[in-house]
Amino acid sequence: MNDKPRFDFTIHATDGKARTGEIAMRRGTIRTPAFMPVGTAATVKGVKPADVRATGADIILGNTYHLMLRPGAERVARLGGLHGFMGWDRPILTDSGGYQVMSLSDLTKRDENGVTFKSHLDGSRHTLSPERSIEIQRLLGSDIVMAFDELVPTTSTPEVQAAAMARSMRWAKRSRDAFDAGGVHAEGAAIFGIQQGALDQTLRGDSAGALIDIGFDGYAVGGLAVGEGQEAMFACLDFAPGQLPADKPRYLMGVGKPTDIVGAVERGIDMFDCVLPTRSGRTGQAFTRNGPLNIRNAKFAEDTGPLDPACGCPTCAHPEHGGSRAYLHHLVRSGEILGAMLMTEHNLWFYQAMMADLRAAIGEGRLKAFADAFRQAYDSHAERV
Image 1 (cartoon, one colour):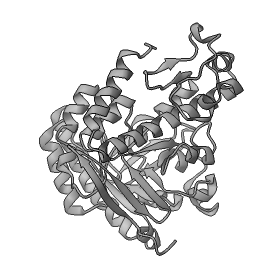
Image 2 (image 1 turned 120 degrees about the vertical axis):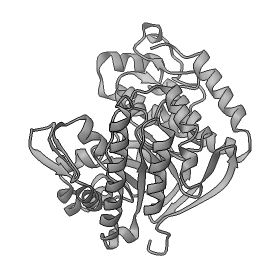
Image 3 (image 1 turned 30 degrees about the vertical axis):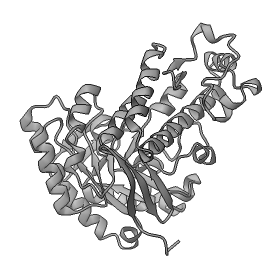
Image 4 (image 1 turned 90 degrees about the horizontal axis):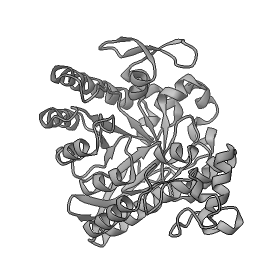
């Protein structure tokens, strides 16, 4: 394992702004563009680690905020780190916890040191600073560590946006320093900085410049997919990725819907994460090449076909063995756990197949044709749910 690279990003092909390549790390290679299933609390909900890997996922995401509260980062470290704890032997990216402490918690204090908040679980008080965030991610054994940042809504005043961006850059430097002081952890993992600045091109450019001066292994575009809408997000992505180093991975945090991902890949993004495929699976929504469908709909009650005839997931491949729309309709309407499990697994297969198709299209120089056809099929035939 030690003879493998710590972090090595290679671009194999480009098509317009889009790139396809690989990130080589000690625990495995990540094919890009990549979608990372979200394993919030040391589990991709409803799917065993081996089955997550079978979908084609090269990397998953863990959540610093949730794991620090339960079961606790120190406990996870004692139990072999997040990889050993949950039984996933490939790379894991951990977010910094910044988004969650500002969206899920009862905040009591936010200052230059960090954020002091009350747990949404039991009301206990905690402080998350850049240094503590990096320490938690180190204890979890993260392969890709995220810098701690301050997120504010895109609807905030320009003054608030500018102040949050500037503070995030100061926190980015403290995160980098804490990471570099981590000894073996810093030698075996990578750290990404997070660009902020809402929808403002100048603020985004200033943020990118500050991050480049600090120096990171990869760069995330943060602060999007928080309600601004696809048109505004794409307008920001028309310039934001180009402000970041071309030879480093670019990660769009918290995105997204299939058409969001396709459009972001066209604009130069390499990595994605989102709870949508798993959350939607638990609520009865399946993603297909002809758009999302709501399996609860009565029209599926006697439909013996698969969710998506073009899908290679175990459920769609064998509709006659308990994978039909009719059976899934029954399971979901009945509240059976198996329904959520099968729907979630299908959605994860769909997302990974979409990423594989994007990688192939970029490599063969036909991304525009693929993307246009994907959008036409997805949007024109989508069941409105």
